[in-house]
Length: 127
Length: 357
Image 1 (cartoon, one colour):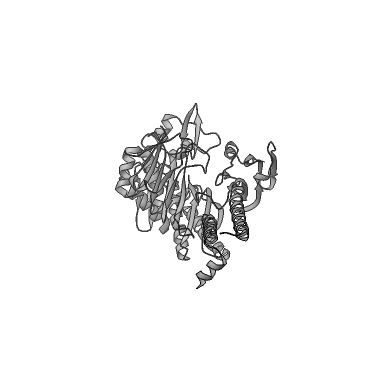
Image 2 (cartoon, chains in turn yellow, blue; image 1 turned 90 degrees about the vertical axis):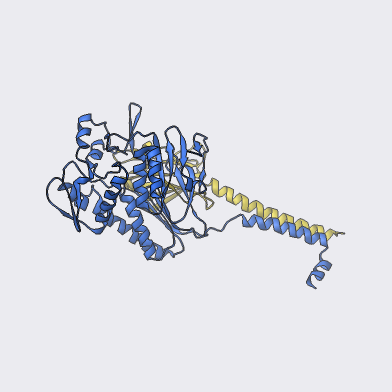
């Protein structure tokens, strides 16, 4: 027969393992939801924006005059909203929000790249 | 003895419960894979974005290799770009129609010889001599226009590959109608050269993406194959329609979505048919080729796009490579050798996967 002390030990082990499982599971989920955008100029990351931290209905406009680029960031999404380039292809491209997506302005050597967690399904995309 | 002691301290049921709990939590940990990160770098060269990723090397070593690879790319661009005024290709084009020979580097000679060799294999569809036609359409212009028929017909005259004569160290172009544009294979060639640089440094796990042209060297640091997304031709860059699992292979896509303009509801893309002088209309939106080298994959993705589903399929079978064709009627055709390594990711349900064709 199990004694009361044994039940205590079982309870403690169950609580510890369930909480470990809970935290490891939810830390993964939250890192997936935590969408970040890298702003890259000529190959160098100049800024990382945490798009998850921007609240709903809020749109942040940021001017990067030194790169001739203006960006708009919203909750879990970002885009190039203005550029000094001639073709303006980057502006016509819409918001990027999924890990691996990119918005590129070739003439200005500027790009936005969405980065996700290490649980990413793919390593790169052939396009 | 130990077991007996344990049994005395912990009753049987308790040991069983502990075993179950530990096993469950143990599996929980195992499902979380340890990911060893390499280093990656984004650069702008060859008129596109280049992403390099190298694994199993220190940060300092990786940076040195990145720079060597990038310098190699820039050297190739300086030799082969027709947008660079004194490149070998620009010089060849400049003297087209005269008897002037132009001395060539091994790089340029190799790529021209490869293009010539494949001209016949592709029934003349793969033709690097349509530079005048590409300039005429200028799909990338700020305000692209459909050229008039007369100009198109003029730009498709004298584009036979016979106009290009290569000897040991030099080449000449016999007609001014033949102007070289290596846009359809230059990146593939450069991609393979970067892989050579990596191998010289002993890199055995790396990934390069040159404006969508991918080469995956070896396997990932965790010993698994690389997962390469295949672009959905009607979605944002980076959104994939399926995933290819590959190792030591190149993946290159040609699509009508890469460079185009729309006029009166019609899409005019950059893959020009040398026979009609018009953007190719074979009912294909994209072709993705998987081959052992990026040069071949690059060339065959353009050639098969131009040749259409049936002829294109025959060509890649003859060449011993694999491919994925996505047609305008939203069907996905995958060659036999890829069926086990291509996983469809058809979230929207828009596309039909054709198993037997």
